[in-house]
Image 1 (tube, rainbow, N blue to C red):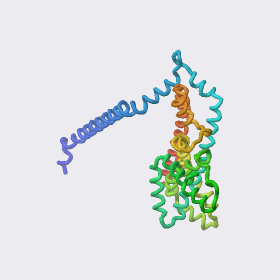
Image 2 (image 1 turned 90 degrees about the horizontal axis):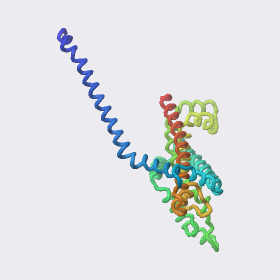
Image 3 (image 1 turned 90 degrees about the vertical axis):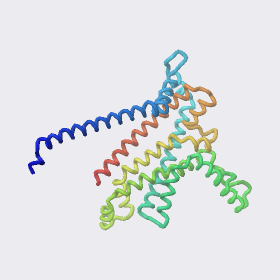
Image 4 (image 1 turned 60 degrees about the horizontal axis):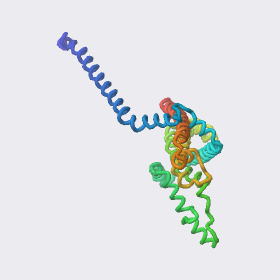
Length: 305
C-alpha cells in the first residue's frame, strides 16, 4: 500500500493535470481558428459581405452618404398600402395556419387514429417542399382549368368553371395556410410530448370536460412551445415570395414583390435596398422574439424534467 503513495506517484497527478490543461488549451485554440475560418471564408462572402453591401447601397446617394433612398421608399404614396397589404396577408395566413397546425397536432397527439404516424411523417416531409410547388399544385387542382373546377363544371353542367379565386388574395392565403401549417405541427407536438399526463387525468377525474382540460391545463402548460411555432410561422410567412410570385395578381403588391419590382422593373436599386433593409429589420425582430420564446419553452421543459 505504501508503494501507491510514493513521491513519484504523487508527482504524476500535477503532471497529468498540466497535460490535460495543455490539451484543453489546444482544443480551445483550434476551435477559435475554426470559428475564424468560418467567419472569414464562409459566412463572410456569403452572409456578412452581401448584408453590408445592401446597407451601404441603401445609404448611397449622388453625393455620398444619404438617406434619400429611405425618403423615396417611405415617401412613395403606395408604400403605406403595400405595408398594409403585407401585414393583412401575414396576419390572416399565419393566424389561420397556426390555428390549423395546433388543431392537427392536438388530433394527432390526443386522438390518434390508424395512419396518424404516417400523416405525421408526411407533414414532416411536406416542410421540405418548395412553396411555389404548393402554388402550382393548387392551380392544377382548383384553378379555372384545374381538375376539380372542370369536374364541377361538367357535373353541374355549368357554362363557366365555378372556381376562380386563386390568382389574388384568396389564393395566396390558401396556399400559405396549406404550406405553413405543418411548420406549427411539429413544435406543438414536441410541446404536447412534454406534458405531464397525470395532470390531465387528474383534471378529468375531477369532472373537467374536454374544453376545460384543453383551456385550463393543456394550453397553459404547452403555450411556450405553441407560441414558438406560431412566431416561426409568422416569420416564414412574412418572408414568403414564391407563392406571391405565382398566385399574386397585379393588384396584390406586398413588400417582397415591391422590392423585387423596384430592383428589376424600375431599376431603382437604392430604393429596393432601403425596402430590403426595412424588411430585414422586421424579420430580425420577429426572429429575436422567436428565439426568446423558444428559449423560455426549452427552459420550461428542463424545469419540468
